[in-house]
Image 1 (cartoon, rainbow over the protein chains, first blue to last red):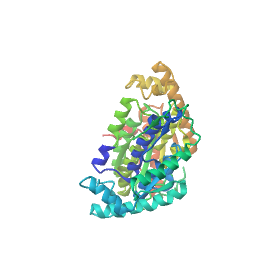
Image 2 (cartoon, one colour):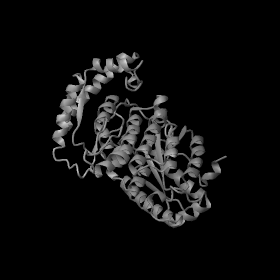
Image 3 (cartoon, helix red, strand yellow):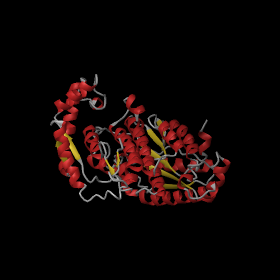
Image 4 (cartoon, rainbow over the protein chains, first blue to last red):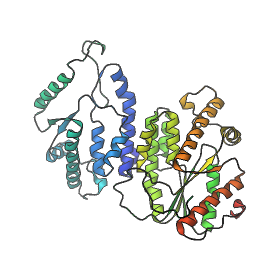
Length: 180
Length: 251
């Protein structure tokens, strides 16, 4: 995938399919085995990222859902919602410039990366908002202070884990797997 | 086949919504058939014939995209693929060729000869145990070919050809499916299943089936006859000369 991204050769469809390959691989090797063992899997991004990002690039919403249909529906999906300006600020303070694809430069909305990012990611956010309703994702205000966000997150996670059998997960503290 | 076939192209499913609808005056001809059935040799003979008939011809083949052919070979060497990742890599390779080779050539009025098309994925994925509906949805971005020629063979006739050709290889023998420890037995079982699946697809999608056991020149003559018939229907032009002995036109 890095090979394709470097050459900026990807079309919206090949971009989507290559991410799906990566996802399916993680599903098989990193997500399903720990789940079957009764463990908790924390996934940093899931299929919804593809549903938002790839549709913003132009693929058909039903097509990308079909491509990802081998995926399991998560027990809980947390959506960290942040306004464009804040995400832009956070990204630019961490490194010198925006990545080509994250700024949606391949979509050709603007020659200026910052402007392109703003336009492309605004579209992505709109789609995320629709997905939140469609899939019952739980929105978290990601502009809030981190300890405050964490409190909300823990409450939601605890609620889901109310009946979780720690014994079965083999160990007093349970076990956690983090596929990236 | 209907002589006055409509020449409008159709997507198999949702297509590529971001690709502007352009006129595609070219012709998309898919050649399907299992491993070692002789597709490439036949395509090599079709090309010069069509060029002599005045057509511009472009070839495209399975896993030959510049984007993915290396990746697929590396992944195969590592044997880490599941049926899902396998299918998606093939789909990505296909999409890359569709957008960068097939559509531009059709737009420019070429005859595109595809050495294998989405039906190969349908057949293989089903044999490997993937959900057939899922495979078909993934390939919803494909363009439906104007003509699908299916080189049909039975496994008994296929075996000596493959052995006398490049030999039985790991993947074409379906060793990844662990059907047996013996390469020969595995090949026989895997290829029989594939052929059954191709034949089922052939009736479902209306392939034109030709007998691949025929001597190479006769088979070429059959293919030319069907292509000529299709082209005369599509162009409303008199059909190109298919030639009694196809191969003799090569030089």
